[in-house]
Image (cartoon, rainbow, N blue to C red):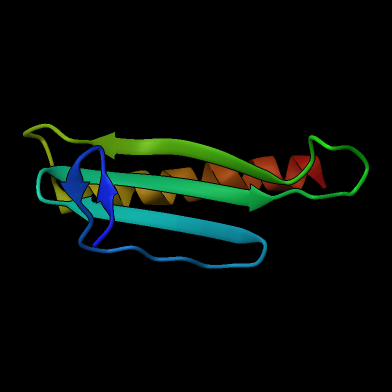
Length: 85
């Protein structure tokens, strides 16, 4: 089983090839990494861009908070994706 900051990962979800969303639900909280494939082939810097926006390993872990943060993060991410296109 994989680990994130020393904690065991209980769930990992991926959606590829253009968008990859890794959701790590661990015993003490969660982390959400969203990656966009912005590979234009124009420069060596193009490719996967990662945001780690939702993260909480404290006592405030709450699935409703996670849902709200995911919705907001998806909106922000799609806005950024549209700007880059």
